[in-house]
Image (cartoon, rainbow, N blue to C red; front, side, top):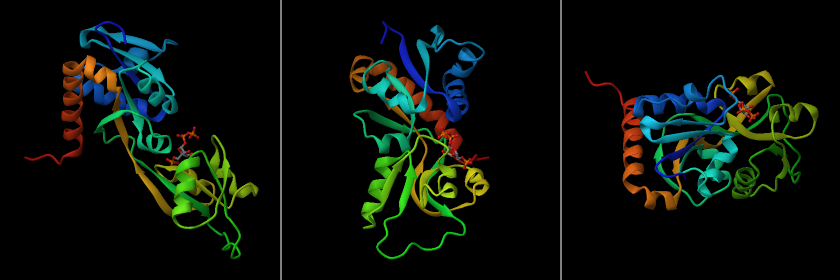
Length: 220
Ligand code: PRP
């Protein structure tokens, strides 16, 4: 953290649009607009006393835990897959999706005693899920394109996130069960929270107000 500037790690990819809209409504600054059309990975909004850094979603928690950023936005799937020592003050209500178990639509049940092979990037969430059910699953680690694994004979099932269900349908998969309901969380570095208590309190309050607006039905 640099002087009075508070560094905020915003995830690239599917959360960027909604995160930027929240910051714009809460504080009048949009990280997307500041960073768009450039190869710069950091941009300052001096009027708000903030610096935004553009980080891969899976890395945001590391930046914040180690204090390279004071604040970040991270999906609950990532936080539960690899627990961190972070303050999690706010469910931002954006990036809603689910971690699910899915299988091929026409899959026959496995013979008794055969451990299902489960392809996933959520190694820990998947292992816990099947262990809790007493099923000795074989976890096959992948980094992406998980949905194609069953049709190629690599796995009997997958554990992955789904939002619209489009990718599952397009690959002949159906949801068997839910593992985790996901939304994006605001995370804060614990030391920064002490050093910049008042400013972070105000930042959290401003974001909370606009999240509340988004979630609550309009009263006329
Ligand atoms: C995620 C997930 C699915 C897809 C699901 O991938 O792994 O492939 O989104 O979305 P849908 O239900 O709306 O079709 P993402 O685009 O985040 O990229 P990834 O492959 O890098 O995880």
